[in-house]
Picture (cartoon, rainbow, N blue to C red):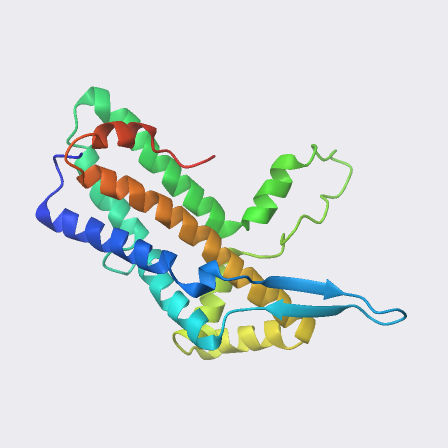
Length: 223
């Protein structure tokens, strides 16, 4: 546990963990989704999108925002800040390892906000690209998860912004593009949600009555 956590800190951590457990049960993150390609003899390919209902997607977006937006009371960023405040009160021998663990989670979150997980995996698996050659077209390389999530949230799902509504309309204008971007935004939300779920386990261990310091030292995010 982190003995330096105040009652107010624990209130934030408990709220964060509770929202993570709630979001983890939402149908949009658990039911089958994706894009399906089919070809008919002599015809153009057809793309079918399997996507949550408007109600399910809106509910997921709202719950996700509580974890994702830095402005929310018990977001990932504020939860991390409360934990780091308590980490600074640890002994010198414990402080550095705990600080590194929390920093790894923040770094992983930053990566998933800027690139899709599929893109990251492709870049890691692909051989080095010679300087005289173009980088191959990795999966979802044109997607910035954070920007796409904001476009959907503020162009339609949660709030209405004329600029984001115009951006969203452009993305969804063609049917095939609409399938691609809808699938991408759900994937981006799902990827970040699972990272938040993992950090919730760390937050709960920080509040536990014993054993929490060991968990803080070993509960790193995957590189």
